[in-house]
Length: 335
Image (cartoon, rainbow, N blue to C red; front, side):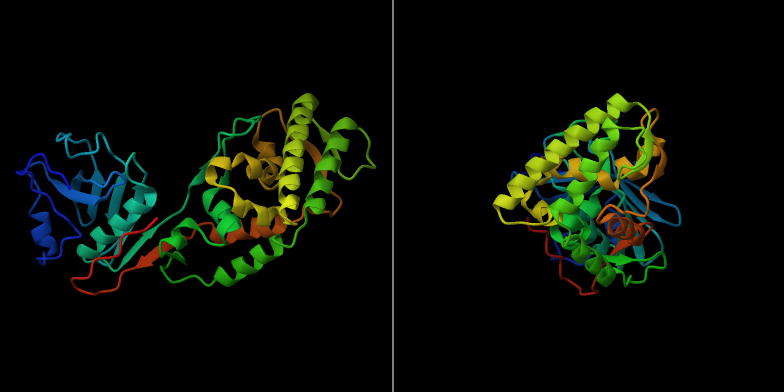
C-alpha cells in the first residue's frame, strides 16, 4: 500500500484493530462534511482513497464525489452511492466499476462499510442491461437483454447470487422463486437447435413472401427490406453458432452459452433477439414492426420460459444479510 501524504485522515473499514462506533467514524468528517474511506485492494495491488460526501437527514447517505489528492485518489470517481432505508437496512443505489476496481470489488467493499456502520441488510435492485457492441445494430438497441437473465442462462445463477445475495421481495423477505427459476432453466436446456432454426426459416420465408397467408407465420411486414437484411443476418449467425456447438456435441443453444465470455456476447445475443426485440419490443420501434401478428398458437421454443423468468425477477430486490459478528471483516470477493 502506498500513501504519498501521511497526513490524510481516512477510515479503513477492513482495519478492526480498534473498534469504532458509528459516531467515531463520522467524526472523521472534514469541515465540508466529507469522509475519506480506504478502498479494497485494486488490480494493481494498491489501495486507493475514496472521497465521500455524507448527508445525514434522518437517513445516512454516502456518495462518492470529486477528489483533490490525486496521488491516492481515483480521479473524478462518482459512481458509488449508499443510502440507508431504515436503521437496519441500507441500499446500494449505484455502483460502477473503474479502471482498477471491478464491480465485484466495490460491492464487497460496500457490504463491509455497511457492516461497520451497523446495518443488518444490504439490498439493491438489478436493473442492468447487457451492453454488446460486437454485433450488427439494425435497430439502434445495444442493451437488448437484462444482464441477470444472461447470467442465469450462462451460469445458472445471477451475478449478485455469486456475491452472496439472495432474491427478496418488497417486504425484504427471502423470495421462494429460486426453485421455479431452476425448473424453467432446465426446460430451456432441453430445447434443440433444430426447434429454434425452424422459426428462423419460417421468418425468412415470410420475408420473401409477405403476402402469402399459408406460411408458418400469418403476418404482414412493414419496411420489408430492413427486415430482410436483419433476419437473414441473424439466421446466418445462428447457423455458425449451431455448427460450433455441434462440433462439441452440445445439442441445445442454451447450453452452449456457457462457453462464451461477455466479450463474445454477439454470438448468443444475435439469436436471443427472438425473445426480446423481434417479437416483444419490436412494435415500439418506429417503422420496423410486425403488422397483424398471429402465429396460430405456435410459440417460439423457450419464449414462455424466458418471459416467466423475467416476470419472477421483475420488481424484486437482491439482499445480503450481514451476520452480527464483532471484529470479523467480510471476506473480500475473490475473482
